[in-house]
Length: 161
Image (tube, rainbow, N blue to C red; front, top):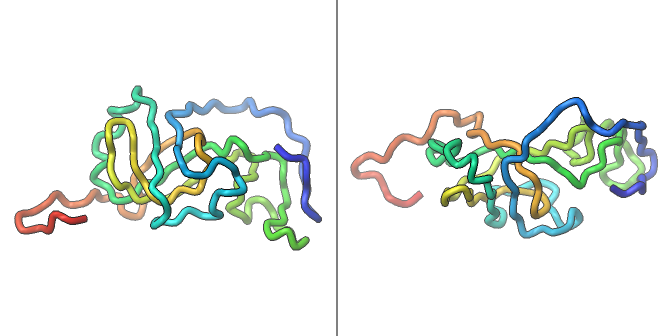
């Protein structure tokens, strides 16, 4: 974590986190190896990425293939956690951390709505991520706006997705 602050940014002293326990259930594989290279927001037509689930959780994927898109929750482990005000554009203007989707937050949980391309064992192939390669995976959820799974194929349906 860098101690460099932009003009008008503020921090607060924080104790090491100890009030909750999270279990990482896998890792995310992306083409970005440095935070500076990551896109500001994931794009649904972005590069194909992999979500590598710990095989222990393989059974938890049952039924997920019925969805076109899923929500991915991940731990932004390289983010600072002490900013209360931020200058996202480096122009001196500031806003509160909770008014931004910045990765710098008290509990750096990232979310992305991604296109599910396919599932191969404990590996999900997706598009739409915006995080550093190796980011810890917290959870997967079906798209809340399309909670009803895709209808099963019917005779005469096109076989292309």
